[in-house]
Image (cartoon, rainbow, N blue to C red; front, side, top):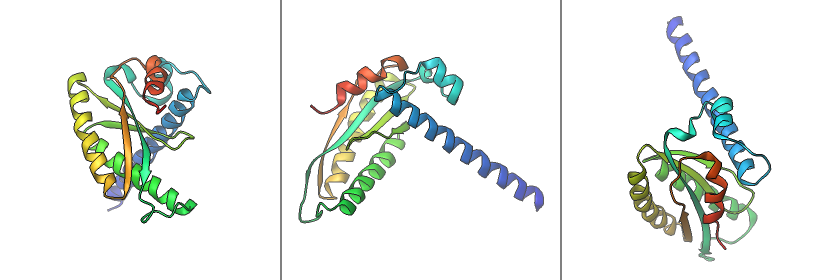
Length: 168
């Protein structure tokens, strides 16, 4: 029994370390996108154990276009709840098909970096998920816009791809 407990503790500890590493990577990418730091693919591999160049990626930005005022009052708590719901829906739907890195940004957008081994399937699947995300979120009384960037494999180009999908 004590061996089982030890193995469970080790597994839980490993899971926590992976989550912490992913959170640190997410924060670093966010700072890179905002221009606060500059990172290379090699630094990401060394510091976070993430081989960015082994697959294809796309930046996805989701933002709110219109809100049903009868469902959402506009007070701060409602707005936070709405953003939380949108983030959860996006994360769940994108993670069904891709590796996903959610990137916290200071603005009102949901930003994700999706990854796939195959560039063609990345583009096709993103279009399908785009429709699912819009449909589910519309049931919350919120109209959103999903901007999907072109696929790329070099981390050094990520800021350019991010800026290309930001709303005007």
